[in-house]
Image 1 (cartoon, protein in one colour):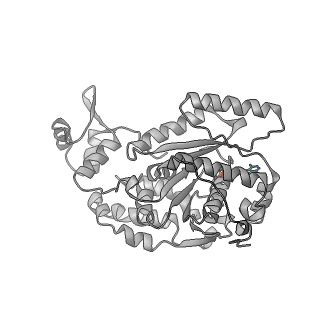
Image 2: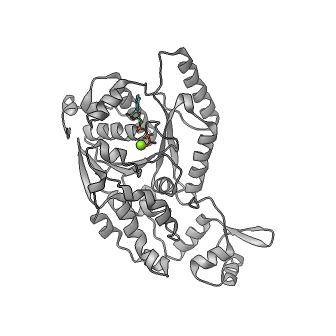
Image 3: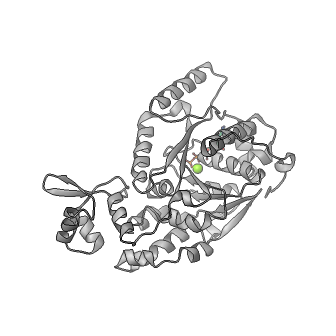
Amino acid sequence: MARTTSTFLTSDEVAEMLRVDERTVQRMVKDGTIEAVRVGRQYRITPGALQRYLRAQGFIDMAAPEAAPAEIIAVVNQKGGVGKTTTVLNVAALFGAMGRRCLVVDLDPQANLTQSYGFNPEDLAGTVYDGMLALAKPTRQNRNAVIGARGIDEQAVADNLNILDAGGGVDLLASNIDLASADMDLAAVPYIREQLLAKLLRPLRSRYQYILVDCGPSLSLLTVNALVAARWVLVPTQAAYLSIRGIQALLNSIVGARELNPNLEILGLLLTMVDERVRLARTTVQNVKTRMEQMGIRVFDTVIKRGATFEEASSERKSLLQYEPGSPHTQAYQNLLAEMLEVMDGEQTEVAVPAFAGVAGSRA
Ligand SMILES: Nc1ncnc2c1ncn2[C@@H]1O[C@H](COP(=O)(O)OP(=O)(O)OP(=O)(O)O)[C@@H](O)[C@H]1O
Ligand SMILES: [Mg+2]
């Protein structure tokens, strides 16, 4: 398993990464150039402290996330089949219908989102994986990795991406099967392995108002990349199967990512596939809300009920808005979006979609 951002580094590990003598690192710790904590006779350095040092030296140049316009929302839950991809698809369709420029990024090797739009992930080049690897490559080949990373032209890498028209005003940065090996490929990249997606998206942020990142069902290095790139985390979860330990593990990853991305916040927990016909389900929803709010996690008032429409729409490769614009499920996603905008913008926005949105942009 790849090391995540919360792991401490020893001074000899940092020396190895910086290609300097361990005594040099100890000297830098003593004179305060690198922050560290002392554990027994050893120094412990967080990846965040290393990043701050590299940034202070001008080796890594990350624009502050708030400086760029697009809001990046990572849709994350390490549990599979909880509605992450469905949520990305439907929220993006609503953004598109509202005339807001939206990019969706498929960061899941399963490539479900890419397939949902009718693309065959096996045929695609210029995917998110290609972009991340292009940013990492000089560091893999060049022993002086930090200098290599500094020398990369992020704009040129972004220009080489194959951004696809997903219809309905939505753009797609697709996944392909190669992403399955990304965790191993990227683990070998020093310093910037958690920041590759942030770097890849940086030149694109001026082109979009919203970037939604669909993550796979794990807390892998790819998911850490999404958390480091994003401003917000949206967590779809099935009320009936919510596990506090699972949420705790996710929170730990968020805390780790904040070392590199201090502005990261949970946008909210979204209860999906809620079966409201069963009275028990209502109690479960209420319990989940109480427990999560005790942990300081916002839970959206909107819940997404279970419905056959989802499978039907997906078999026709359509968003709910395209498949059944007037359905209560479409309305639920509209309500969700209104809540999301209220949290992100701090003000209420009516989520009204034009009547023709249901037929516009369908690829089917
Ligand atoms: N509210 C719902 N009611 C019924 N079925 C749903 C609902 N939301 C999603 N589904 C269906 O459940 C399945 C899993 O949903 P989805 O692919 O969005 O989950 P996921 O979290 O992205 O899964 P993975 O972790 O594998 O990427 C899909 O077949 C989808 O069509
Ligand atoms: Mg998915």
